[in-house]
Length: 69
Image (cartoon, rainbow, N blue to C red; front, side):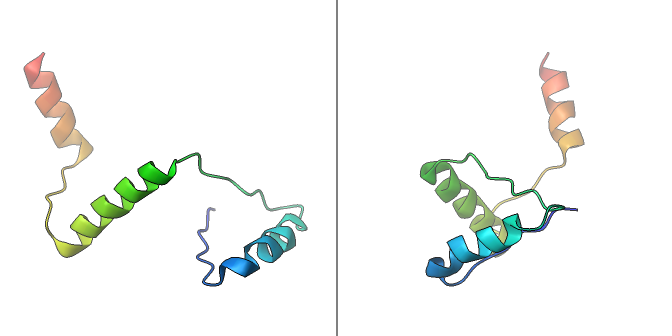
C-alpha cells in the first residue's frame, strides 16, 4: 500500500521523515521530479479539478495512435 502525506508545516518535515524511517516495515520513496515538472503536474491537476480539460482513457489514446500507423 502506498500513502501520500501532506505536511503543512515545512519545519516539521525532517522530524516526520526521521520518525517514519525508524519503522523497519516502511520504505520512503522520493520522487525525482524537478520543480518545473511538479509545477506542470500541479497546473494540469488544477485544470482537471476545474473541468477545463477533457480526460481520455488509455484505450482511446492507444486506438488513436494505432489508427495513425
